[in-house]
Image (cartoon, rainbow, N blue to C red; front, side):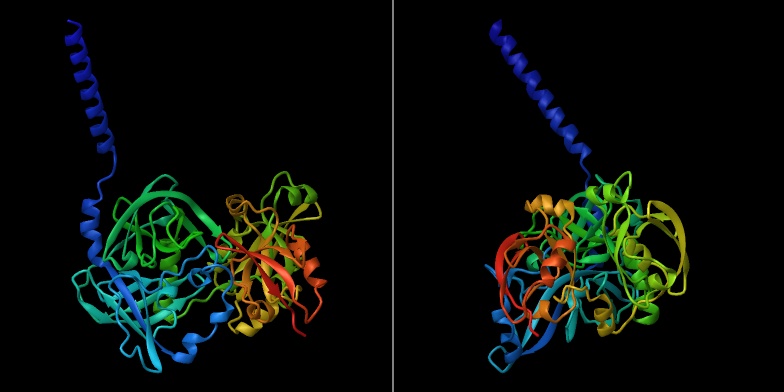
Length: 475
């Protein structure tokens, strides 16, 4: 009797577990139909670039730290590296001139051959190859690029091409399923899935994109490929990963489709992207700053510098002002402001709600076109630290992950000293000349005291690797 009861109990438990597993499996999404419909419009992109022997050997001594040849900018993995599989051979590998190839992904957005991908996938290319799912291959024309959003628009000569359906990225919510199709490591049309981790994510190296953060496995070769929602609509363009090793670590970033299509429209009509310009250097308001300014909580974009002859200066904005709203939109974090401004046209008159001397007030600002001359931009943005870079506070999530206290992150390399010493956008500087850096103000103060023509130690964290480098400011 006891034996019969035991056997019956085991059958009941097994049956319950089986139904539980089937119920759980039934609750997971099935991507089969989505992949069948969408994959024909996803393309593989490879490039050719002529490189002289001299050029190929230049700069090898400038790399910093362990395995530095495999490291890229912090918070950014440029997926255009040579893949271990399906790699094209250089036509003249032994001669004085060879060819360098990259591999990435893209997708067709119109039946007549417009293809969208990342700018860094095709940057510097002499020839761009686009290969379709059915193995047809075309030489693509570069319509235009927008390095600030890392987007590039290509055109191939073909008709009746399969296309993707564009979706509304602004309707995404954390926790929703998303799927990526691309060519990681040279494998054709690989599919990976995950969920949206966050939206509107601002990264140190990009001020014009409110990134979609996901845990979708994105690896070298996925760059430029589409990110789909469960309706089979493209809601993002896979662009960056956060990594310490160069491989996937569960933190991936995609450019929202709303941003991408705005860029596409301008590239189609003008071949370039024009943005409005405010002309301020800004930083986040942390708890200590909020308390010192008399705010109830940390929010807004704190102006650390107003650039000469800029729309901000003409409107009367000052260093120390905190922009709380802009054109009717609340500014919670400083990273939101560049995107809001960049979406507007030059000549637009907007109202900015600012916090100054303990009071809120409205200032009217007429936006202008952003300067196109790199020298003008560099001169206007040159922070007074003599180092040829613009720095900002390290975002809280980055500081927590890297266990960093204080320090500054390099937001932009302007040239000069920073370039000569091999610094990169996204590097985190924690010590300079033997002194720990608490933040931007502390960094500027220490930098001013550095003597010319003498090397001083600088501690840098790049892609999770801490290292010391000799740093010298020349006369």
